[in-house]
Amino acid sequence: MEEVKQATSPVMIDADIVDELMTFAEAMVDLISGKSIKRKEWGDIDEYGLLKDGWLMIHKSEMNRFDIWKVSDGDLLAEDWYTVK
Image (cartoon, rainbow, N blue to C red):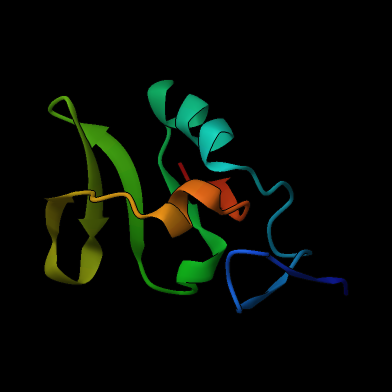
């Protein structure tokens, strides 16, 4: 099992869990096509990003709500994005 450390994150990720990790720009292409995305760094937190009502949103399942996503530089530079839906 190969472990990959992202330059923008101290979190070690298991590369076997997710088939293909993406950059933020690549994840945005999936998001624009209607898919939902999340970062491997977020771990088991049941949150994901999506487009809703013309906004980039984060769905927080434990609170069953949507919040406008304030994208950080860590998100922009990360290469641990993947499609969830």
